Image (cartoon, rainbow, N blue to C red; front, side):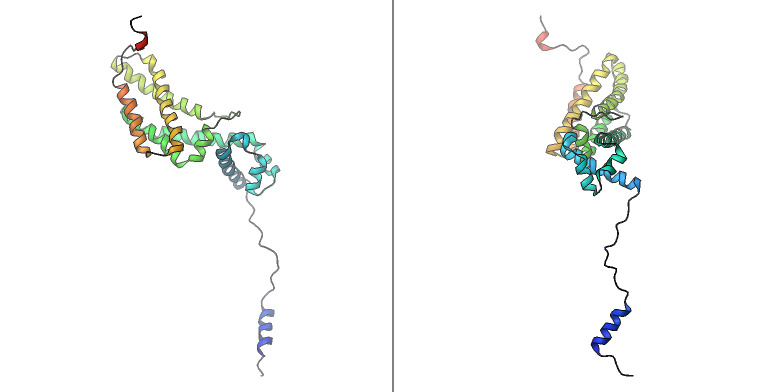
Length: 229
């Protein structure tokens, strides 16, 4: 049998291969749960970058490559998306701090609380930025202030027992708890931007100030400017 010339052989091979449809492969459609999660992640990033007011549903939809009605369908609007993002971050931060508080000694508890907050700032920077930004919207579980209040209540119980055993007024434990937690939180907001020294050093200095101050408390402190009047 005669051989097929080169051009005819190539044409025969082409005919034996199914022709391409010419259509681009279709994208895999996300489930409702996957789409919701995607929108939450995008919203979290945008709220962290721009804050609540400067973030729009249009941009959330554009980044997710969906239409605006899809976002509305899942969250009802920007407020709903923001509330979900904040609720998640509140729970994540509170869980991280409460889980870290395992020591029995008050100084170690201070160290654990400081490291837990700084660790969250370092590893979940976008989430922390969302929490500390001002917003007119209140989520169901609160905001950064509510987290600090929850932690302060835990610290209050610890301080109350210590105050009582050392002869201080245990009723003042709430005041000191708020002061300690506030000190750590404000330092954390500062460290968010500067990121130095390293978190272990920052925590050590926070505990140094807090613990050495607590260990030399006056039973009935007065203001120097008020003395002798």
